[in-house]
Image (cartoon, rainbow, N blue to C red; front, side, top):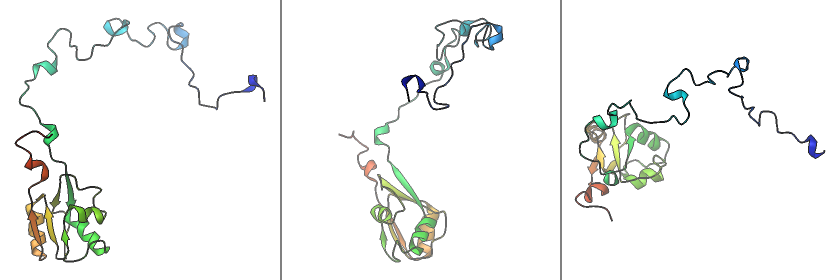
Length: 165
């Protein structure tokens, strides 16, 4: 092999399409910029500019603000998935279940600021849940199966009055 025989792999190098080289090239005359106007000129790029009219982002009223650093990071679990974990032997019947137990069972990757229990699916075993929130249908289904749902105050709501440090 010699230096003058070295080539790129096929498809490794994109062949540049020459523009502005006559009508026969396929990219001649206007060179893909269409007809006249601002977009045909060099240096064109004015995001949000509406031809002197007040832009949309300035016309719409701004109200309030969102304190994103205080929003709680809840993770949701449906009853059907909990029952599947019980059937698979990952959760014992009659056990006390909180965020850490759900993480250990593999239903959640992390507990975050709390777990919300939702009522999709069916639960047949008696389980006691300690969660940050639960839907009415989930509470009714758990109590029907003989279990209990305890809703605790989430960690994020405890610091709602002031700012996090």
